[in-house]
Length: 418
Ligand code: EPZ
Image (cartoon, rainbow, N blue to C red; front, side, top):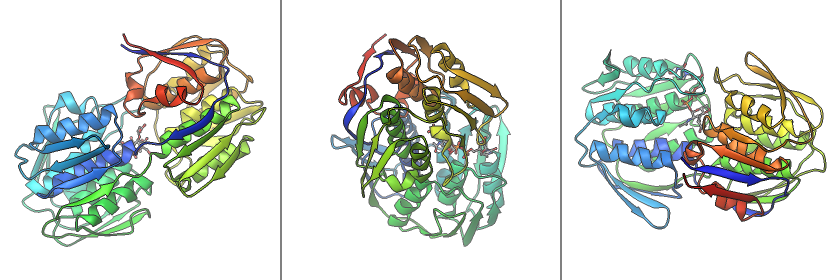
């Protein structure tokens, strides 16, 4: 298994290009199952999860043509298999996103239940309940969930809690249902809006994406089209924290700072300077960071996918702060690894009290999930001495060429192929 070695203590300076958003390209790739016509997608990030989703579409019978300019053409006209197998689903929970499109377009889907993951049990009951409300017959057996419907019917659905992929799955299913679907208590993440914009470009009739109520009027069929994936706000936020933690000066380009208002506000409270342009954001780290309280919430609240990164920032700040995780039940796996670097953190349920130490000391650590591994990279960049991060396959799921992007702005970082 690969590992990443970092010799920390250097301030990072320069420009980092941002890739397409993982959490937008995954539902949008699944959405191509809704049409028999070709869909051209641009700004595709080169990530393990994207490769996995493309493999899954190929398994269904789709034809994918990847070009060298981060583009892919997807042709689902020959899809003939509605099974999403365990060996793929267990490596990527987002595989569940093919369920809505398959039932809507092909009348059935057999999806391996994703099972839990490091950050929580992450059930899909709300996805299934919504499809049932639209007339699907749901059956669970042998670790698989099967959904069948000759044609889905529009329904009024109120989500018990805000779910990003639940909103996306049912929005996709509703595009081909008979009649109107009203989804309430929806996720408002920018990736939901990007998916809706792509679906609309294929002929779907959707109103209200990005708000908590989405109206979808089903159509008989979708046509082809093209769409560029929006920039990755979590990658952007991760590098913004890298500038703050190393006292550096980084400009992230090809992004949209308006997606990160909550995260930006917290960086400013911590003492960093944040300058914003139409498609770039610049962060200048202060001499000394102030610890800041964080509470994760659905968008536009503070994103749970940046919680680990800001907790790491608090470890090298001055003062004490509380970090509260309200979205997932077990998203503090990074804490014990940060403690190996000398961090002073006390976890009590879904809150972590961090007493900033001003600095950390490098040591070998273990990545446990995608965003925890990003947090350990940030901690290694700020720590004195050498940090060795093991199991970096986690990080490759969601960050494109992270060590190359960081090396280009002055980080002493290298990947050891194992
Ligand atoms: C999406 O996961 C993202 N993944 C996650 O990003 C992100 O952390 C999460 O949304 C929250 O923003 C993708 O978009 C591919 P949820 P998702 O359904 O949709 C509970 C990353 O690091 N829930 O919004 O799976 C669930 O257990 C990943 O890029 C149910 O109880 O998350 C959780 O506690 C990690 N029943 C809460 O809702 C359901 O049917 C929010 O989960 C669905 C969800």
